[in-house]
Amino acid sequence: MAPLLPLSEAWSRLLALTAPLPVERAPLAAAFGRWATEDIHARRTQPSADLSAMDGYAIRFADLPGPWRVVGESAAGRGFAGETDSGDAVRIFTGAPMPRGTDTVLVQEEAAREGLALHLAGEGPATLGRNVRRRGLDFHEGDLLIRAGERFTPARLALAGAAGHGEVAAHRRVRVAIAATGDELVAPDASIGPDQLPETNRLMLAAQLAGLPVDLIDLGILPDCKQTLENAFRAVDADLLVTSGGASVGDHDLVRPALEAAGATIDFWRIALRPGKPMMAGRLGYTIILGLPGNPVSAFVTALLFVRPLVAHLAGAADPLPRTRIATLGELLPANGERTDYLRAEIRDGRVLASTLQDSAMLRALARATCLIVREPHAPAAKAGDSVEILDLA
Ligand SMILES: Nc1nc2c(c(=O)[nH]1)N[C@H]1C(S)=C(S)[C@@H](COP(=O)(O)OP(=O)(O)OC[C@H]3O[C@@H](n4cnc5c(N)ncnc54)[C@H](O)[C@@H]3O)O[C@H]1N2
Ligand code: MOO
Image 1 (spheres, rainbow, N blue to C red):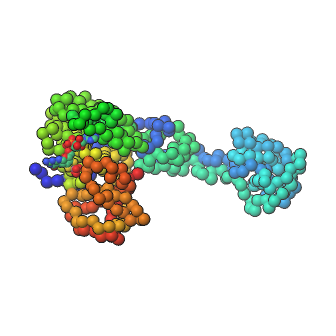
Image 2: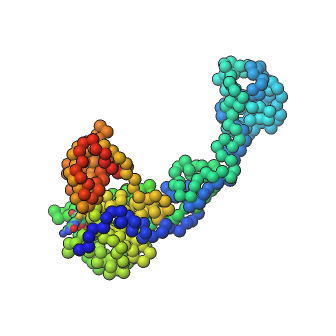
Image 3: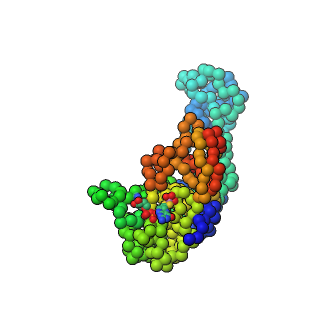
């Protein structure tokens, strides 16, 4: 059997499988979580005029300490149309345009009004322009606001809208088909026989993809039958097909033979990774295939290391691979073997501790974990206080 593929090579080959998906124009509300494909410039200036930042009275700073005569009102969306002279004040509200001739806002908490007469009733504004948002404070027409390759966060969507854009250019959403394979699998709420097991990888995977621009196609649970698998794979219409189970070398591990019978080419299979060794990647027509191992922890880790990055890559992310950080180890770790190891771990009192049991079928330890400790192949034993690389689990 061919030697195991180093993880770094598996990642390069993963990203080389395909280019990002085509670009389309999307309404702002549909762009959340997608990546911008072009620079976005402001089509307008914001604020488009000097506006009051507070409720109070628009005055001339030079007229302080007053008194003033109230000559009108300026509200947001309905400004004061007239002119003002020295000694005039205009009742003004937050977001309203500053009347011509005024330059400063006296907040109403520091003003006393009787009819049209207005007096200072506090310290008043200390500087000229106080409580005024100047035209263009946020941005000017033509300013570069969002760069190609940046992700549309809630704030960036609002910024694009404020800048006069109703829609933006983004890679189209990724259509991901998900199938679980295995004769033993039944729905978690089904009545269950002694040889059966609740199927949980599809719902875990779907949840791991939440937040990415994905449309899921659920192919359900497929049996360990080569012909059925082959038929199901041929019928897939998706950018990415993710299978779980049947990826190893047993007599009932039929995903690879069924994919090949359907006309797929396998790009790589079997990675120097624990858990997740039997992960496979390939292509069937325009569909990229990621075959995850069935063990739930192996499926989780390979989804984190391969499925999510590939979806982000298809959606246009410039830097889609998972980011690790350095943490301080709280206990001894033995030397590592030939595979990159992702140990389920928790951070307690600022130190990272691996779970005692690391079996790749154990969901309880996975569910407790807040991070994974990354151990490079052949890493020497590490002791409490050493720095280790970790991958946070969101
Ligand atoms: N002789 C060898 N045996 C195995 C090897 C090997 O190299 N030589 N590799 C082992 C490794 S590592 C892994 S990981 C597993 C993965 O194999 P498969 O992808 O073929 O997984 P299955 O056999 O289908 O399932 C494994 C385990 O997980 C349960 N399972 C499967 N799908 C689901 C699901 N959707 N939800 C919940 N649980 C699931 C399944 O019932 C099995 O218990 O192979 C080793 N063997
Ligand atoms: O590589 Mo398998 O995923 O350890 O159990």
